[in-house]
Image (cartoon, rainbow, N blue to C red; front, top):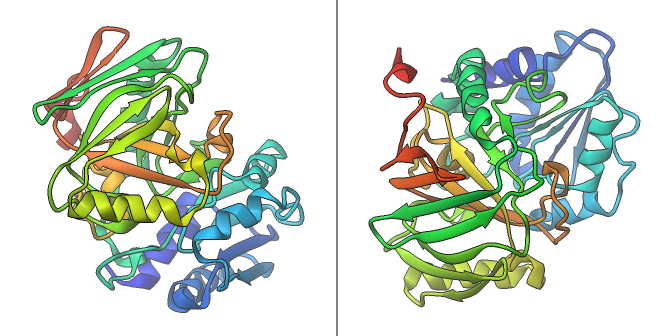
Length: 328
């Protein structure tokens, strides 16, 4: 798929831009090609298209908008097309509460291919919405999530009082808020995660795990990361934020995009891949949680048995209530 087609999918199907609406695209010069493609697609519909380039902020772009809650007040629609996600920031939370639309479209990839050319953007939003709504029935009013894998994951999360949601690209389906990631998510209780998480998929922005990494959590925080090559990369990445709150588990998600594969090339594709699950760390304010932090990152794993209040929803990476009809 070419970049312009990907941009047109986002403008036409995901944010559903209308004439005279004011659109802001937040990006950087590193993604000038993608920014130009989005702007060209949007210009076919509205003459009020603006671009904000924030090259100097890099991984701290989220903190920038967390400190500037009113940054999006002048716009009707905002696309966060920087390298890192803005979706958990206070500015996004305020924008959505004021009936604006926000799409998280972090463009970071690890293989040099533009994210706008990835095949997973072609997933049917109507189909993923149906899948997500079927899953949400199991999470609403739930208290606990238990996760087990053959590699040794034995993890226990509290979701008491937390509201589950979903992303499928389409802002309308997300009541104004969406992400390129196709998933069901829950902002977990920040100080209640306990147990062992064996990471065998993707480390988000860092890429694929070379060998599984054992991670221990107590009182909601990471207390131990296994010291192998991938574990060292993860430690270094977290240390860059200089914020201990980045050790706090703050989100649980299950990928629902049957077009996606967890390959370590694009973290949005990784965490969207059907049958994977991920644990998010750091900030979760706009997701409905209470945790502020310098940023947010997700760790993706495979082949889990997952129970929601003792009801099995996933067995060995197969979502029980969706099989065998999801590929029809």
